[in-house]
Length: 79
Image (spheres, rainbow, N blue to C red):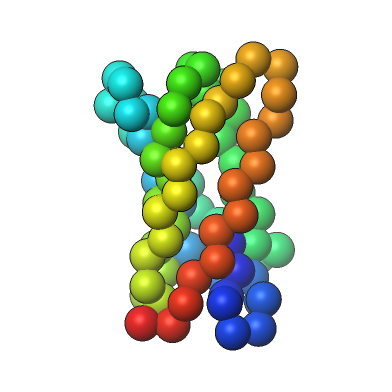
């Protein structure tokens, strides 16, 4: 998760992932380098939301498939 204006990471931002079929929801915190991850998610379609104080939330949709790492880049603009 990075800032729109300068590309710097937003450590401490919250990322929530929700399976659009089952409603399974998990939340994690962004690390100092801007990365985050969820291990062992069921296959399917997901909504991914990033939030941080002072920034507009960002929502993306993605698909988790078998044997493939899924990457989602979330860039937040200032609120």
